[in-house]
Length: 181
Image 1 (tube, helix red, strand yellow):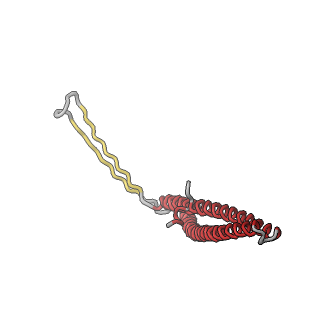
Image 2 (cartoon, rainbow, N blue to C red; image 1 turned 90 degrees about the vertical axis):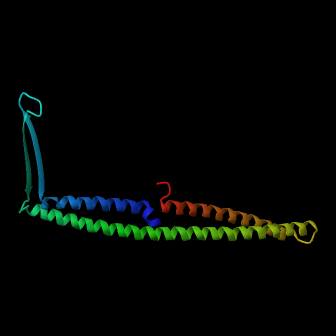
Image 3 (tube, rainbow, N blue to C red; image 1 turned 180 degrees about the vertical axis):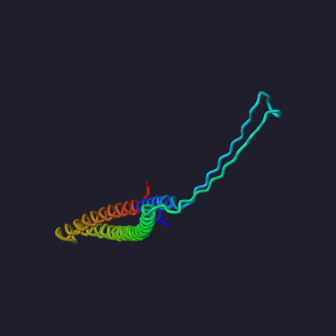
């Protein structure tokens, strides 16, 4: 159902509808023409009911027996165009499904990565507090404390990058669905 809302699919569907209408138009020379006319006339110096009335009606049906090769080949070309448009619509639907699936999986992966990064950041913060307390009590050397602080900074940067990636993936998912169009 989401594939039908994707802009490329909607464009292909509109194109297929236009080509189908053109195919119907190309078949028009092969159909009979029916014309109907009716006339009612009044004459005389008096108003009704004394006025004389006359009426007439025409009904004409015509059908071209030989419409020529141009119309025949035009109809064949229109039918071929209609088949091509239907195939293009099916291809657009398939591509939309694939694009939607890839965008959704990318978004889900980014959200899972963000969750993992968030847990890793929490653990790194706890280790950082422990390292600071040990350093303050003289139980940890400067080099180990510095490595712990650098790990915390790297963890925060990784979390920010994962958050950015999740937002970009969400925007891609939204764009792929055609939101805002």
